[in-house]
Image 1 (cartoon, one colour):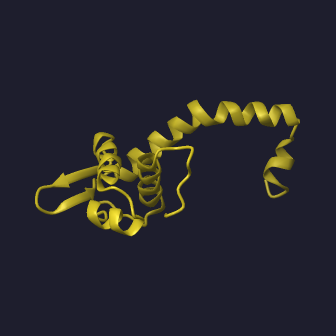
Image 2: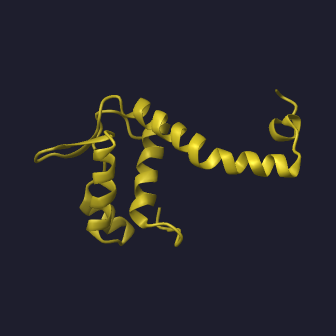
Length: 116
């Protein structure tokens, strides 16, 4: 990552990056996620920031703690993340995007190109 957006807390950005990796398959179910210390050292950030992001993911049911082993992607995490992210998009992001599309009077063809 290393290029942080100043408009959003870093822990939220870390959470989003892990969710993206789960959705893309670069972090598979059952796979260990990088340790808090490793992420903090690599990104030059406070370990508490990474811990907060990981705890959010545990609370959301995407990661699980294994005592003495670290954090792992839970079985079913990809489907759960996909459902959560779709819901967030439709309730939070899509209404603004739709209003912008309507204000600009964009057609389906302009939005999706000729291949639809």
